[in-house]
Length: 228
Image (cartoon, rainbow, N blue to C red):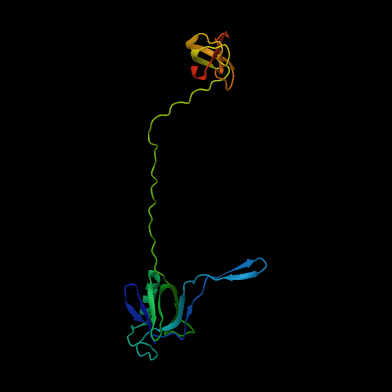
């Protein structure tokens, strides 16, 4: 069994000593919530990122070391430490392949610890943790510019006619009558400025007009009156 690490530039090297064991950490992002009259329930979440951790040793000098797991090795353990430390600081994906298994793990070296243990100065002890890496890419989305809509110029609307009521000042063009029913037709007003003194709704001649000083003139039709 060989533990091979390939960097982002596709260069591969084997770890010189296999670890006694390795572990892959896999979990789901579950949540526990409380439901009325039911108690706590578990909401199954999506899978979290996996990680793999290996702990092993590196001989200070590799010459004549009988327990190496690969034939091609560097001359000393410091070279391995330098390479692993460089990969850790690069923050770029690496791939760990374990022969004789289906494990081909792509990730980022998230933890790298090393030193010497048990007072033994002929080898380094180290722990390497690789967190799963999933390729992703941010997509830049351009915001759509809002078009400024302007109202189309059209024909100008005429002003609504002024309302005519009792006391309104009006221009009169029409024949005068004695009452609102049209009895007793009399003189005809032409562009005369008058005021409305009385109104008889629904009558044939609904408006009684008078001079501005109050002198009575007579009843006229609706069409004969125009507000000033």
